[in-house]
Length: 80
Image (cartoon, rainbow, N blue to C red; front, side, top):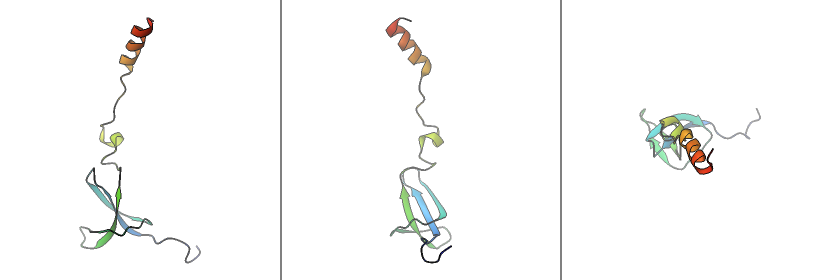
């Protein structure tokens, strides 16, 4: 790899405020805010909109489509 052209790869905390999930990983993302982690060190924190703690697909709160009701509605509407 060429020296000096790649972004710095360092530990970063990603935090989902709606889901209450925070996890420490390595990333090139940067932030001017920091947070103290359980190991006593301070890391940059990046707030995210959606993670596995708040996404409906992972939490099981996804809206399921009622296909049987749709078929009955079609039959009532168009007499089939």
